[in-house]
Image (tube, rainbow, N blue to C red):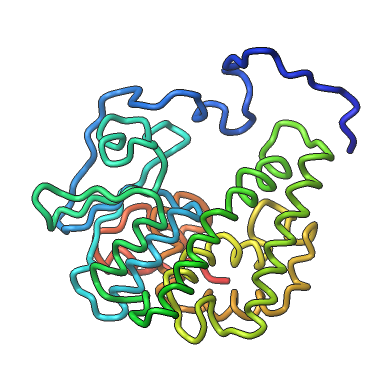
Length: 288
């Protein structure tokens, strides 16, 4: 598909509320709350307000991994934020995350409570709080942070770039699809070359770098992101990414974490809200 029409940007851009494709109703060029709505609060110190998008899954996987490792203080309440309905623009959510994006975490073990937003910041906060999934050794710790920040800088090209123009945009245009497909394949090649020599992103140890990267690039490598994008991008050719993807995807905490705050898929894959381990009873989780 070729773009035969030339778009000339206006001298001053103005907001066209009708544009934006599937997410037009949730995209806007201004910040702040659109309505008053308090956030619910459960019994645990950690209150998570999220949705099972890749960024949301990072945090629920981290919390489930912490619990699996024996950190009882990581018990949490996970509340469903319906971004399609604009829950992220409620006044209570904006107080926790002024950027109005999921996930957002409130740690009530401090007085006053500590708000934590941006998925990588939440992972780092939890890793330091519980002393887990972040090496204490200087070199390994730096390598973990290298890959954590790599993921944060790279994923917008995958999601907002390739994912949007290939799968969500109201029209498909050759130039942006080619541009972002090229970049995503370059990123997969970066991962593949690195994982050829390393079990995990930071070396031999499973860390927050893997927890952050897997929900984006692992799910893509499984061919379960953006329709037939896996075939389009030939993801099976990245053999070392495939090995890493499947090993992580078989972890019990990852299977559970993918199900939390999920409102779609098979009934057994959905744990719309999570308040205790009992919420997983009868659920299979989301398996690869």
